[in-house]
Length: 92
Image (cartoon, rainbow, N blue to C red; front, top):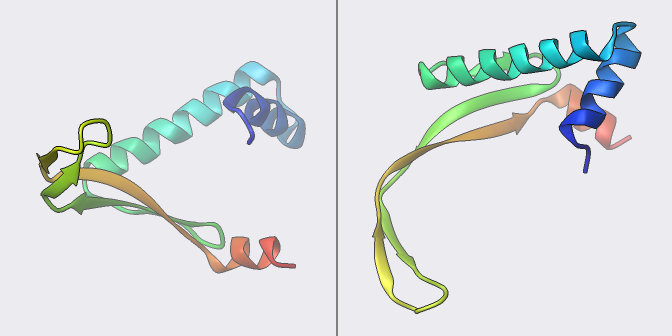
């Protein structure tokens, strides 16, 4: 797994910028994606993939410690759909 710090280092090296600039750029990217998803907009990066906000329906779940069935409220979460370019580069 790549950590955020390792990703910052890789961005700095590939873009020819210092680590502080790379960290600022990564944090700005994360903030922009988060803001878009919060406002209900998908974020599509052609060739890479699409970030989507989805609503999980309410339902029931089981507490693994007690075995008790509990009600789970509806909630929002994020999903990532892999783009064709990324999929192709991973497979070959």
